[in-house]
Image (tube, rainbow, N blue to C red; front, side, top):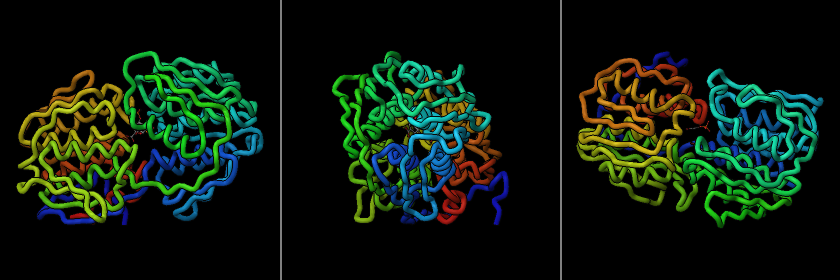
Length: 427
Ligand SMILES: O=C(O)C1=C[C@@H](OP(=O)(O)O)[C@@H](O)[C@H](O)C1
Ligand SMILES: C=C(OP(=O)(O)O)C(=O)O
């Protein structure tokens, strides 16, 4: 059955009581795919996330000459062989930051001309710092500082030292580190600028490189050196996507019920792990249980939620779901440190202020965050701006407030297959 647009978000009628198995992490899947493509033999990415972002990554790597078998849950990858099939290829980045930022550095390692483009909004997302850095490292990149651009790879990259400003996105650093071991001189990346957001994602990159035998020196702040050498072929099982757990755990918070996310890792570099602490601060009970992580909402559900004072600089991708919960909370909230999320799938601070505000929320938008005060909310259309996490925010409000219609809920396919069906199954 097709999903209507706008989509009437289900409203809770009783406390949710569910145990869910969530699809794999986008960030882990796309890193595993890139590393498999430059590895010294075939790899397997087990329980890979099958979503728009990861299928675009598989397509991009295939266009560059790798093979990625996406037919089952475990994706077998044969690495790049040094030249682009047919000498020319196109890469569609869609709206995936990981494709637009992680693929260009490895494109220098294959001989051929590769044209990059993406969704209309992708042409506005920042990538210029990486393109400038790549030129400095010896990769021939066309004269552009945003999509569309072309890379005429020669099959090898000199590498060396590069200074970048990664204050707009941690992915600038991750992109160069992921490819760096295969550059002739490795890569030494130094950051010069305002603090880098989303640092756990750089930790994730380093951990995955080390798992594959790559030497990374991160002993100095704002500097990462990757030694040249092989990237070992690897067989990796992908953890569930903990950032995508946000709406599901939020459904427990809103309804005063309990939701258990199966296989929550005991230790992880995923930003979504911060949900344990954030939801506890808002008045939820958070417990590790045999099956995974269980969150139980306040007895009164959203009427018992406390506001939150939080710097989300490290975990900005949680901001939309958290902001939605804050709009339902009974005391004021202040979310700070997230100027960079204006460069995400949409300007998330502006989008949240507009859409929560249009349902009656009392929101002030600041250059680097939001202030949200308690106010009665009403139904209405919640626009998503093609942003999966805006859709998560909309359904969270809809769980508490009757009559919320989420426009383009299908945009959740960026990182979650059949999100609307999965979400409806909770109620
Ligand atoms: O490297 C990654 O997988 C990601 C890094 C972060 O990007 P920013 O540093 O641009 O926030 C995060 O928000 C994004 O969802 C995924
Ligand atoms: C910022 C995000 O995605 P991307 O990987 O496209 O940057 C996100 O998923 O919240």
